[in-house]
Length: 118
Image (cartoon, rainbow, N blue to C red; front, side, top):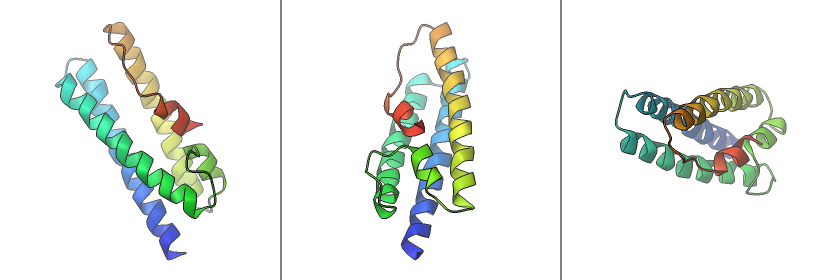
């Protein structure tokens, strides 16, 4: 139980970092920051998120490539709600970032975010 709580705590910390990095990326795409730095922040956040999510998935008896929604659906409260809130926020940010990237002619994004949110 204590290791699961630590796993949830690590995942939620990584998800907050990822959300903040995506917000910085949206700002950079809108001309309010350095785009290369923002992209690097998102990439680093994604690596951290993947590592923490894989570890929690294993603790819950799920495959290592389980998506965040899949993990949330087998989680107990309050973790289920917390993870589903992150999914919703990340989807909004993903839509914002990809829209801004398209408008500005930037073609980049990590496909793993799509997998994460499944």
